[in-house]
Length: 189
Image 1 (cartoon, rainbow, N blue to C red):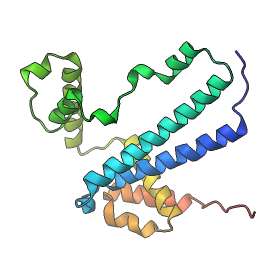
Image 2 (cartoon, one colour):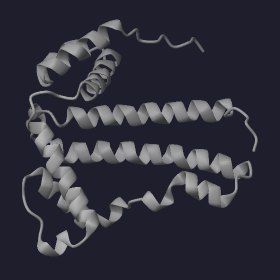
Image 3 (cartoon, helix red, strand yellow):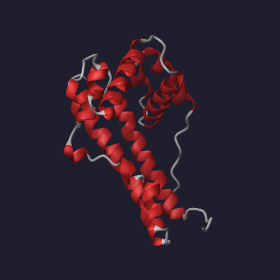
Image 4 (tube, rainbow, N blue to C red):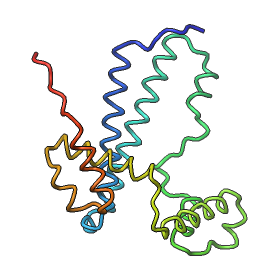
């Protein structure tokens, strides 16, 4: 196996696509805020699927390069984790409904409980709902959200907007993040 670095054009394309996906993830978080009640369903789905599609593009771009350079097809399939692929086009499945039921404190039917995947996702939802009741938020999650919001606010030159729609602890941290960031200057053509 060759241990050559990734070609620079591929590396730059991947960085651009990942940046785009992260921006979409930030918007998913933004549209979960209470002031977005009128549009959260539409916009969280748009931006979540945009982020997923962009990251899928990243994986397939890397896979195409690997194919081009002669990677064994079985190894490539293994690296792509094709068994984990879920198609959105079929819509939410029974496991997804079980997860939502757990989040909302609802039971699942006896029939649904027969499938181990449904029981596992229901328990995961219950655990997440229990965690949501806690006044303590996960510091890593708060920091991640603050970084995303702070970066977006800085890039849009709208740091003051952070106070208007975020929980206070996230807004304070996002403002700190934005304050230390410098917007990169584009090189002259």
